Length: 235
Image 1: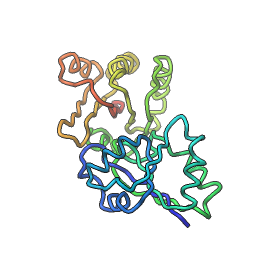
Image 2: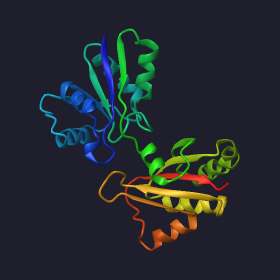
Image 3: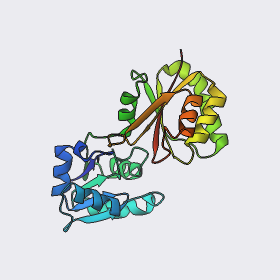
Image 4: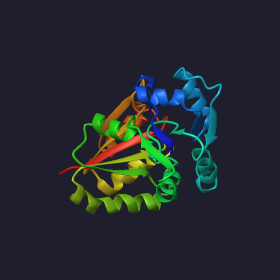
C-alpha cells in the first residue's frame, strides 16, 4: 500500500520545519503542491535537492479535474502533499483528494498527516485572546453584505462560544473589515491583527476597531501580506 504524506511547511521562519517533514521531502520523488514554483523555491532554501523531483500542481478550482491524475500516481508511488505555507488543506486545496481516498481507495492508499506549523494557532496564542475555545472562520467573505451577515450572526454565537474567532483577511480589505466590525460591534470587540508571523518583522497589534484603524492611518500597522484576525467579545 502506497502512502500520501501530508507535510506542513513553515509559515515564515524556515527553522520551523520538522525533522520528519524534512526527511520526507528529501526521500520522496513526487511532490504534490499548489504552486510548483513556490514549492521548488522552498525546497531549495531547505537544501533539498530538486533535480530528480517530480512536482505535480494541485490547485483550485481544478481539484476535481486533477484528482484522477494524482490518484494514478499514488496507486504506483508514495508522494508528499505540501502547501505554499503551513499545514495543507487548511483553507487550501486537498480536501477533495483526501475525501476520494478515504471513500474509494482506503484499502489501496494510506494517508499520514504530520503535525506542523499553522498560522491559526500561532496567531491565537500570540494574540493574548482567550484560548480555551475558538472558532476558525477561514477567509472572510469578500462582499460587504455577506461579511455583514457573518458578523451579525456571530453576536448570538458568541454567547455560546465565549471564546475567540480566527479568520484570514486580505490586506486590500482589512480596513473595510475593521470599519464593518466597528459599526456592528462598537467597542464590544477586541481584535488582534497578526501579520508576518514567525518572521523578522512579525507584527501583532491589538485593540478596538477604531484604535486599529488609527494605527493604520499613522502607519503603525503596515497593510502588506495576508492578515490573521483574532477577535473576541467583551464579557
